[in-house]
Image (cartoon, rainbow, N blue to C red; front, side, top):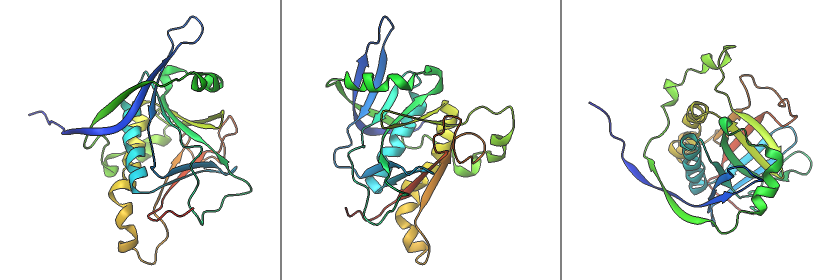
Length: 231
């Protein structure tokens, strides 16, 4: 018998359509994070993201939305958010927004600044998502990622103070399995491991943990759960 997944209201977003030249235009789904605590920084050697419980829930929901929205850019405007107190970057970290998009769009990231400037108010919308939209971490075949013929990897780009995470639906779902731990496991991590370090998830660009991508973007995204957040 088929399995029916329960759907629940997801994040509140605004949907925008921006025309470029004579083309069909770009569809942008912009999250409305309000006071959610999420911050993203380019620390030169790596990319650092920080999230509290509510912020982690929003990030996971948008990640699932990106896996289902092959024709849209999923935009999280968090560049103005302060990082939590006590985290240190290398030198002077650069604050970034986040965009998740399907690689099939072949969106030219160099045009993002123009598109972002023309978004306007957009149309309010509430996303509906299944309760569980990612596989269990134990079901992900990590060894397969290193096979030469495997193509479902994430890629990172930087443009206009924005990190672009680009991938297929398969790539977003596979990496989303690890990301889901920020919601399911991170809140109880300190109780289970009182002498341990912070709970985090690391995502890489491509099959191997390179320091930088072909475009000289840091090749690792370190996402740290912050139970308390002081600025």
